[in-house]
Length: 297
Image (cartoon, rainbow, N blue to C red; front, side):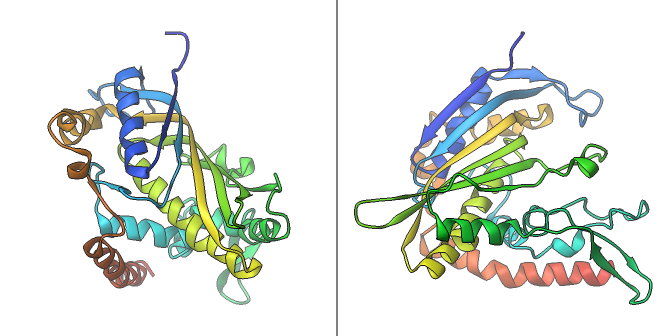
């Protein structure tokens, strides 16, 4: 094959878009080896994916066929709010084996790195540092139709050399206003690499909540205008299912499509029992992070 397939999906809700994108990949994707394969692993299914969720906050929002649960979704949302930013390594210390980055850290403190201040006996931020989140919010408050409300993660001085650089590359926002004066936050989110089975649902759910809680709510607060979430366009240069995961995806999703209704394959995020599980998970996750910190201090 000469060309990587470019597949396009547009659906009303997150759960429907996630399912449709996986099905298109399964039926029309090409096969690739990856640098993460183990001996004997089948080749991955891969494509370039352009997926649009027209109503990101509408139900059915949660698809049951993703390898995780409500606690994991909540933990990822907290991570995107910065709860694990302190797990990032000192870029100047080759012996530091902590995380290379967090998305929140790259968005809020782009360009920063840490080194040891011997006088204070602690790691401190050095170099230039840009709070992209603050700049984007204020741009959209001042001029909702701007084309310049963009955040990036890629730091070529660092990421070209590391084993596991950021998959998320950029987030772009623009606001539409309807005839009733309601503002709709539209976004384009681009990943260079997106694990369609192992991570993409959590990624999309997490950034929908990020767009709501971090971006839209703050724009509404500062502008005094109602801000709802308009369409989310999700772009993945490499949208893939690792060969080792194809069997699980087939058993949990593809083989069930003919025998289960959409209602049986999904959850409504607004349902009371889902909201209860989601909200109660926060205390457990904060305790989990605290215990990890104590064990690795």
